[in-house]
Length: 272
Image (cartoon, rainbow, N blue to C red; front, side, top):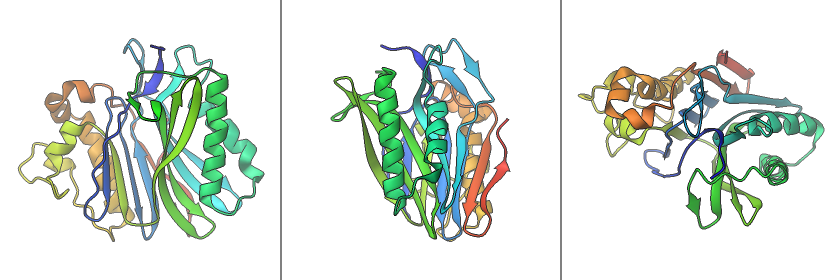
């Protein structure tokens, strides 16, 4: 097993009212919402090594892409860097994004596929092939990118995944949405104590104060309450008591941003 730094996670999926997805993750918490007004994304600030010997609480997990014709926000989850940081996926992603700033492509799918393939080549070259995140039919999961915003006048939110098999990194689109979608990463135990089978808040839950009944036409403030509330629940004393193992790797400075057609990219709470 290759040692490294990461925001670890494993996949799982639920899609209901109107469209929700939850992914179990022991070492990162991310919330993302796309609505008619745009895209909002939030993340915790903790990073830990796979053996939990090193922890930082002021890590930036959200990043912007502001180029002619596209304004995006993205977050990474999974095995992010080697222990010695000789390879750092977040750093490499920022480097390639800068190199792609003048890239002309017809739509967001072509852009993100180009970005994902370039990062896959970089991971293969750096031998960043961890086996800490579980294995599927496509190989060992390395990391996922949640990315959204505006490409020209069209808004989207998508999830992509990198896996490796036989020494080669594979990049794949997991899903994409153009409106009315919400995604959460974090403790599954905490999530199940906050929301019922219809994804509505459980009123008598010890975590009820953190829950929000997200509507398809909610405002940016409502999306913030939903995304940040869940992350805060995972970091809270109540959340840690409910799921000590699942929440121990989640914490630090919560930062969030939104992308709208009128204002473009805006930090609501900046990373440290």
